[in-house]
Amino acid sequence: MAHAASLSSMDFEVFGKVQGVFFRKHTRQEAMRLGLVGWVRNTERHTVEGRAQGPPDRTEQLKVWLNTKGSPKSRITRAEFSSERTVEKAEYSDFRVVK
Image (spheres, one colour):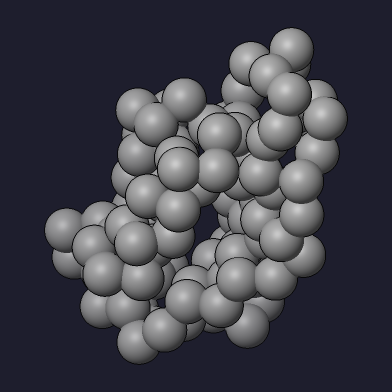
């Protein structure tokens, strides 16, 4: 993936009941299923935030998942996406849950 001509990078923050419901674990699983790299963590604002990088069509699929699905017990009220840009190579080697 690091050799792809054009990769998409996006930051995200998900609001609602997203802590204490394995949201980070499920986000990591979905990102890895899509072949994305980056990270996800809980915030002190009781949201979940992260960054995902990979092929543009795959980051778009993660956007939909973050907006509509999430973990089985989560209740998403909204997801915000920012710092969307094209990168020449991925800044990460895998997708991690960070503390």
